[in-house]
Image 1 (tube, one colour):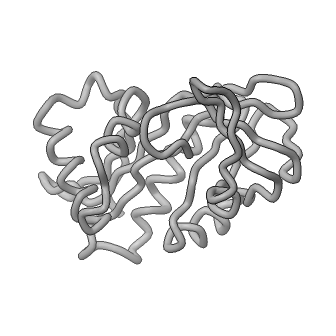
Image 2 (tube, one colour):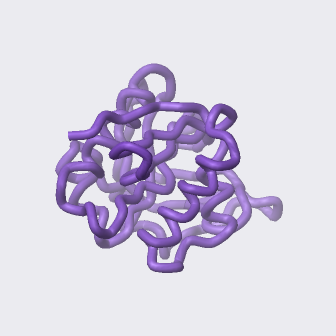
Length: 177
């Protein structure tokens, strides 16, 4: 199994960022937009290479969520992808293990929004599906995000979470979750 390198966005350089973006575009079959790309920047990236070839990627970025009357520091997982020709070889699990280690050192919790294809991976790693309602704080106020209720997963770290309660994410352009 190739090793996983952890690097902050600022240390990746334009060539590596171009490689990551190309991997994400291929892995998501062209359904990875510019907002999705911006969401993946500003945190720590897990990169799996085989020589010069990038095989897998994931990032964890800082966000703030509201839950049970308090603000949580959340390590939010973004842009987890494995090159199509290298799937089902444990690379996604290796990326997630590295990102979970990052989350365990500081944030109150980890969170992510899973695709239908990725949900089983996260559940198998101990991520809990959010059973409560999801919300977002927007420039116009708090709004309900019911379409995201079944996709949100959390990984409790320092915080005690009630996964049947409300969870409110912070504002950002594009997909809120």
